[in-house]
Image (cartoon, rainbow over all chains, first blue to last red; front, side):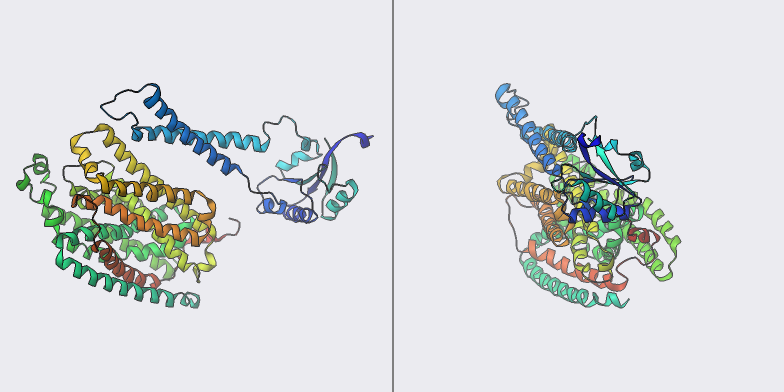
Length: 179
Length: 390
């Protein structure tokens, strides 16, 4: 019956965080790359054990900040020098000191917006449906369950072998999760 | 305790080198001063504001640590305390400034000579006796608070009395307010009064931010040396340097914010009695110094400290901190020297006086530093910090 149904991956449940970290390390060593873990609280060292790369978000924020900075300054320059030059107290049209506060604010705006938008898009949010919630018992991930998922998309994924690996690593249960 | 022995010879060696640099600087200063006393006083004031800033700033940082806790404070506490203990030396080093008042502060010392009504009105506050008495009061207060804080901290090392954190915290709470008031008043007396008609309400905070920046930069350099040896090697983590790097970063931004804030308010107001300060500091040569400050006191440290990598690695951070310390000297030069000279004249004394005062200061600092354990031994909060869960 379930053979023709598309599966998302194999999800193993562990009883504590130490077992989960060990399991994550072992799966990484075994060559699996499309893995993820779900825990009730942040587990120290789990990110490293899963081999998750550092996010590129800081670079997106930096770019957003620089763009905001240049854009904010140019907007004021364009308005006060090119589009609508006004003589204010005999000061030069390009009175850059007075542009700095707005330039600063635009830098913050650019950085903040790119942080939020960058974070959401890197996380793939908003996402109304995610297959991981088909995992039996998954509500325990916010209580006392520690879950490790190996996705079907993983090039090394093999239903039988992957299941055996996870079971050998001390999983309480290993379930096939529908996509 | 034998672990801390490993660091002792290094400190002793550094103290000897400091003393030699101090004596060499002193010899150079004396030679230079013989020909040009007014240049000497000007250079001396620049160097004095710089080095006194580390001592006074350390007092403030120490009090912030007692109030706020945090990992950075425990590993730098003994550095800050040794630096606070140099305050009596700093007070003594003020004597040449009193001797040179006629040269440094002649604008308000003899208001009758130039007939500026505004300065004559200020003479109730700005006169020789009041200036000296106020400075004595500042130092009595700072040395008093510093002595108590160091005494309780030493006593806690010896007796393990955990209740001593209470008086330290209480004194720091009142002390940080007193520091704010006294340092602000000192900034008026020592540097703002150089241009006696000029005023800026952010001058005091700017003075304190400068002190804080110098203090954190200095602490990072000393800590990076001490961290290689026990007992600090056992407890120090890259997170401590990360914290100190973030504090330096914050103070760099704060300095920029206040410096630019002061400028834009005066620039946009464009009032004669206010813009005079910038008119002295932006003709051709000084403009270059101002631009250099923008790039090297703000932009470069800002960009370097933006990255986590530079803050986590002690050796990178120490290099940036050294650079920040040097640029603090340039900032003091830009604030003080234009009062006395129209163009940028860099005199030999501008180099020898910081070395003379600095050598002596470092020597005394390095004599105090190894007197006690380099980490607080019985601070109950420190134990929490060592918890591996963190």
